Length: 225
View 1 (cartoon, rainbow, N blue to C red):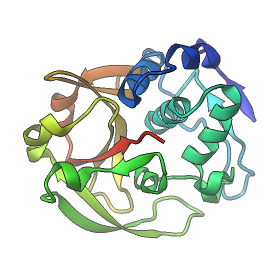
View 2: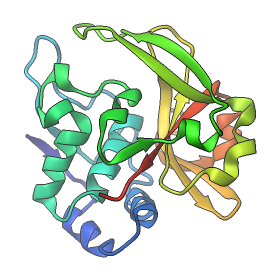
View 3: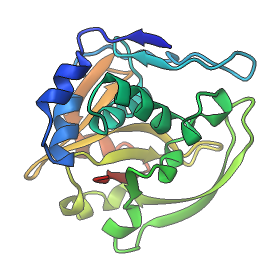
């Protein structure tokens, strides 16, 4: 296992959020990541190189950021965090490149997550079938994807919650989303907390301003388990 925790003290954070609701846990845990540098390709493994479990809080990309937050909010201590991260990042909790959840849509299989995209749009979302296949060494996946078009996002804003995981849909061949982040809501103030390659670190940005530049979004809602 490769472990770099940087400024984040796992047990202290988990003690601080004991008893919090799911929404508040995600908001509080993710706050500790603000300012952490954006870094891509931190995971270790490939079709030809054995996968190694990576915990690196000193540099995150958009996907590893939400993986760490989701695994932390399910955990009580370092040991349970390691096990939860295995299940968040890998199918069946098996640390293997081919078992890695390479696509955001793969989170549909997590027991701690529910796809609420259809629900919050009263089943008026767009539905597409895509062949996800941009990763060398991974068999293509044919997936049905529901997404909310960009022009409808503000109309359904009242149904969004703090802690919702948001994936920004793309029509690009082989991909489901081009970016992911966490929605942080304070009444009618909506922010996107995400690891930004443009800003260079984990940051809060105006959610609606950011989403207007995208084709649409998928919403996964964390569940109490």
